Length: 276
Image (cartoon, rainbow, N blue to C red; front, side):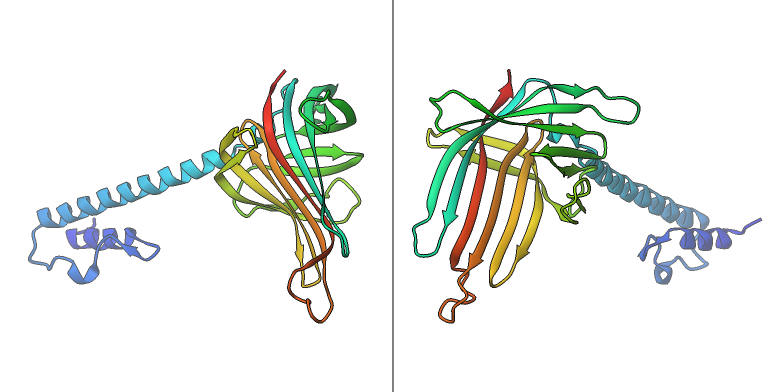
């Protein structure tokens, strides 16, 4: 049977976890302290440990509750639509930038293939275009999208891209070109839970409280810039994207100054969304 001294020493060893001591050996009671004092100190230490474990467990649960979110960042309910304002800026040598604005509507219009076994359903996404809000929508293309508990795959003009990967995790990376032959392209997830705000000329402000940003291409140098990123909002889908492809001036008087000589910028920003 363990003596009171052995019991105290065993508790001392038990509650020293990852460099955090719940007993300070230098301040342990001397032999003349009675058993009541020893056991009182042990109980206080146990209570402290339980409290710390509770706090750590609570923090972990809060993080994991966000990480498991996924498909709700790209709703696939039939009739779901998003309208976007597109601004294209084309740069050329010795000319002013050429700016073109128009609107795009993407609508989940139906199911092309029902889910079966472990194969997710394939949805049809109809893409419409118009130059101004007063014009009628004109069908421009039909794309497809499918999603499961691991990823969202969107096929655009015959090329499939892994738009999102689950579960969500800050800094997570994956190959966005895993289902095409364009070569590996690492996508990176960042800025989880950030708020995104957009506004238009009509002072219509849209606020999205829970978003994530996907860095799709980040390739820049002193002579070129090739970057693209997308922002997704919970229960909405894609709310913003930006693509920049530039060639910079390389002559002696401008090299390294990031002066655009040629290239293109495409900005896509949500202006309306809903179900119809």
